[in-house]
Image (tube, rainbow, N blue to C red; front, side):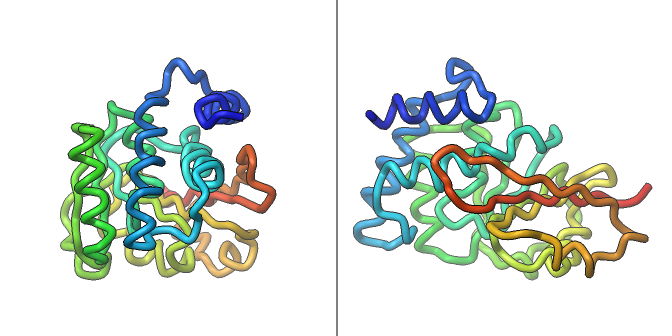
Length: 208
């Protein structure tokens, strides 16, 4: 199956209308990631078809759980999931954060080539990022335990905002250590086309 056809089928399997997505930009991102990966080892996945399923479609699977507003992707790496979600949602502003200059250089190149106008880059560690600006969504992809991620995210979260850790395994052990007095939680299993493995997202909000 051609990559474009696989992308269309994958979007439909996620319940999305391919006509409402920038499919050309998605494929250009995969081409660029595959090219840079040969020299910079940005991802352990080398095959473009697997990049499509395990990176791109995996990122897009959380679209239904995003709230509107300015969003932060912590430990974005090669722009996963923030760059992909920014392409999918041009109405949302995104800040992509990573302390690895090799990976932020790739994102700068992707910005030059794909020209989205809703992405900024912060080359810093999360713990060094100054608080003050509130985000509607703070998301990470398998970055750190949910409890630690919540503690670091709260100073940067809007009152009605969401913390969304994406994980590749059951979140039961992480949920049990979160303070239910502070947070209200939802756990969702993600069904990603072409990925025969567990995928989960935890939605964490302040108790009002």
